[in-house]
Length: 260
Image (cartoon, rainbow, N blue to C red; front, side, top):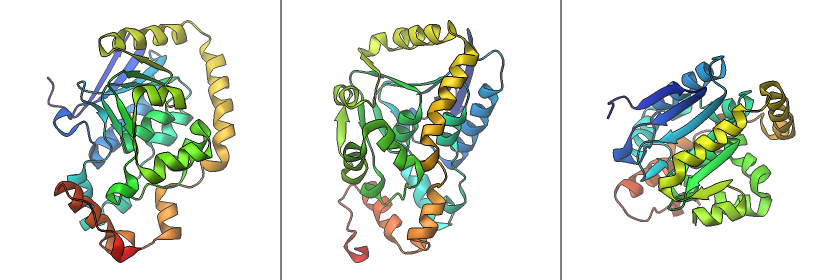
């Protein structure tokens, strides 16, 4: 196995970007995010790429979002405030179809990356859900609001405000996944969809995808940092985020009552 934390491969006109941190369930750091963003641009501009696949190494997890150890350390240094997280925006602005290949936990930042993709193909043991308020991670702006485009407002608010976990079958029923298959059939199903997309007019696919983008445009203007500046400009200095991270690492229930 490669020791690189983000893998990139192009084969038969399909670019695959893989988070290769299986020991931490493919949780990402700020450096991982920057590299994925650079690779997204690379794939978007490569004439030898017609479809992009985002995935994670192994069958335990697609991605569980930000690495809590990294988030805690970054918050202590105000590093999270400086992270320019544009991957979700790149996914919807990319002119090429993007597929999330999900095997295992698809949680938090990993989950909202998946629901921004044009398609999600999941193994039947996968688990979906958000983590933000559970661990004091202040996701906000369009990465949250787009869930309502996918699910409708009631389900989107349940997803984000209750932080429950959902099976692959529930994700399929809700519209978070397009297809659910046994994990041994996952790569076959992903390749099948890639081949279908590659057989179609790339320019017409660009037009269709851009049409959906303009439907989303009203909620695409505000990102997480803008929402933080409006609602809680001193958030990372209050101790609330640190309480969420510490509780997660110490395997205890967080006590957010001082900030209520």
